[in-house]
Image (cartoon, rainbow, N blue to C red; front, side, top):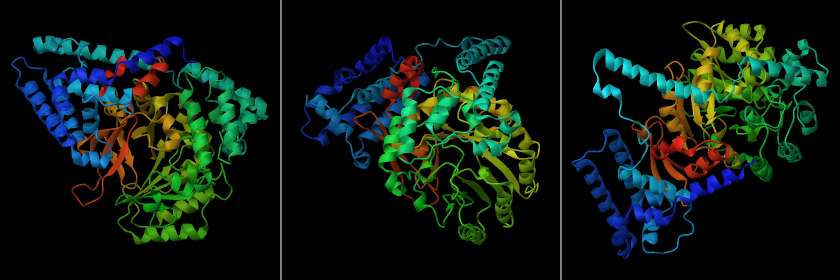
Length: 606
């Protein structure tokens, strides 16, 4: 429940950003703007103002700190991009006209506090007033040398890490003894309701048979809120797939307190907007939900190709449970659909297609979750792929280590390892652990079975609101390494309308990478932060030259123009897409008890 204090805090955050505050920040140019007779003149005035601001910042006798000058540079460069008439045409919105209108006193009710918040921070940053360093004193190291300097720097690093550890301790994880004991109790309670023995529980086939598909059975096993029950009911009434394994239910706390298990529940319990949109478009889903435009990158049934040497192969189109924000959940008819396995003819054509394309050296077998298949069917499928002499790596995309770790049996691990030929062919497993609260000893045992047989295990994390608080994602990376899993990718959540609840501004992921992940050992932060661009593939976010911010829409959403990975190798169209507005994200964090001031540098990540 949101308290009165939190509502007032949210109100004050929005009230800081208005057109009047903005005009006060640009007072020296407000009158010349008001005297302009058209947008072209206004654009010239703003260009001249940017030149003046830049000259003042770089030519001042009393210099700004070099790091503050970096912020000045970035903000002015961003303004220049957004003031471009060409970029305005691409974004289909004119920031210059918006600024000119308010300078002339014309009403613009469409311009929200979220819009003004971003614009005002850009102005402050360009003027050297970013305030992101106001809480820091000058480093002792600047005044010292030798051993004294080294010890002073060591104290600074100790303080930095202690602060990170203090924050991370707020997020309990699944390898703590108290959490393990609680989940053992959950397991015993669930087994009793389902009439199962410990041997049943550890049998993946029993887990499959007892996947929970309706709200009545689920509320027998774990406490649900009224909204959770209503959304599950509506999901089933709309014919949308829903299911949760008994093991994954045991990871949920049996209470209405969502502080610890919020990310676990959010994975599989549909929210209201998701249900409404998915149900509304259920009959037209083929075109409505294909955010990644796989229809344009599928040269053969079951195959998706966006890169020269690797393809996605999707022979099995269901899972034991459905992740709410899954890229392909719209393709799945039902959990454990008996007709999910592609026909032998389709598989044969896909394998034949792979044989014909010798540039392909790696196949990602996914779906759906291919580890739902029996060992025999999976062996036959992998055998056909491994018989292709130019395939050097087979990747298995599966969430089984998290949703049903007992599926990773010694027999399965031996079978997978049988396709390894050191020096010639590699077998790897790519899984999806989303939050440190999903970790548990059964997952560690499953991973260890694979690693002992020379099979690497990698993790793809989606950066969502559920793991976006300070050091929340960093804690997961650190623990994954201790569990034997290598962080591989961190995906910026895709811009799908039905999963809006999960999305966070790209600036927050950039901030997390620089200010939190960067504190970890290099082996803990081996993952690459990416934005998956529809049709084009992965855009690497660490390199700012791979994208441009070209506008800020009236509702505060930044508009990005992403460049294709083939840039400078061949001509390809860019892709333009709006992000999530920063101010509402900070307000949402405040509702969760976070202090928005702890995230204040977010405005200066582009």
